[in-house]
Image (cartoon, rainbow, N blue to C red; front, side, top):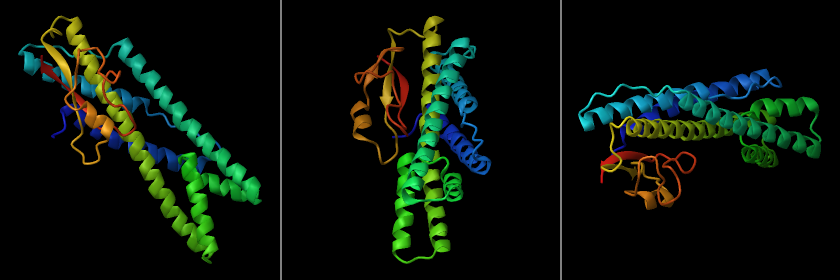
Length: 253
């Protein structure tokens, strides 16, 4: 199934958020311990507004009316700021938890403060479970008889891979959440203006065109809900899990 325009916008901004996270991780590693929390709020707001503009254009073509785009409301900006702040707290909490994990391991293994500092600088941005995975990986390499330089090189590759994974996960999750929210707000705003009749139109869930669609998303494919209402799973629409690529389209009842 082809992706909707809103899903395409989500993908576009996913790249921007992912790149911003990777840049933040590099700068945070260099600046440790003065780590500034990762803040994707400006990109989240941009994604939401881009989706709102796109959906307004879709509505104008569908209804054959002229609709002035006016989604930059205090409510929309407040949503973006709150959602962005929630993500800042989430990412920062993960970073602090990862640092605690390294510190605890250092105490257990007798690492010097200098060695702990080096480990933290390398691992800033990873999830706590990824920190453990890297540490276990290093232990396995040392036990195999590998020298420290080789262990550091291979561990660096693993760290980069895990950081890329997390950056992609954050990018997809935040961008598609923002894009879908922009689409919903455009539809609901059109209803409030009397341009879009909720008695004639409703929302339909569109699953991702990707191969690895989960069972929860497949179960929602084609399901419908009122504009501004909730779907049968209790949500206002996608995303319903990290890296969810689903979208919603407007259809006649």
